[in-house]
Image 1 (tube, rainbow, N blue to C red):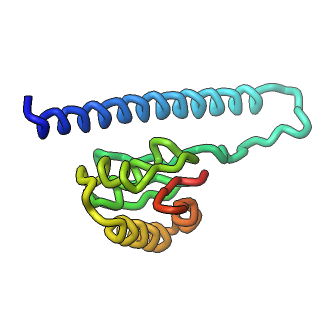
Image 2: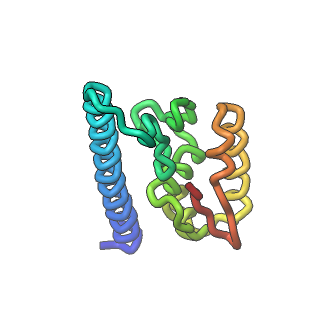
Length: 156
């Protein structure tokens, strides 16, 4: 096996593992949403009134959903089409592990499949993504993309 094939297989293996973890997290979020909906229905049907129970508390720890079939990001009821772009892949990479920094080297490998690109390319993609998100009414999501010493995270 050539080194290029081994590197490509390693990249694909990592992508598959992250995709499976993302699917598992999404399944948990769906399950929680269904349970919350069911609980709301049960509380609405019950005759007793519970004081201090918030009916529709926002889930502050939720992640943006990235729909790969439509290439859209869904956040707090809004949908924004990003297309098959580096911005979509970059946001997807950060959303897989929110609140955890990802090094620029890992981002270059995972998003661009090239660890030899400069950090200026990465900064430009982050800037364009933030602009797109703000224009799409997702300013809070744009602000959640944090960079520090060549690392980035989605701070939710």
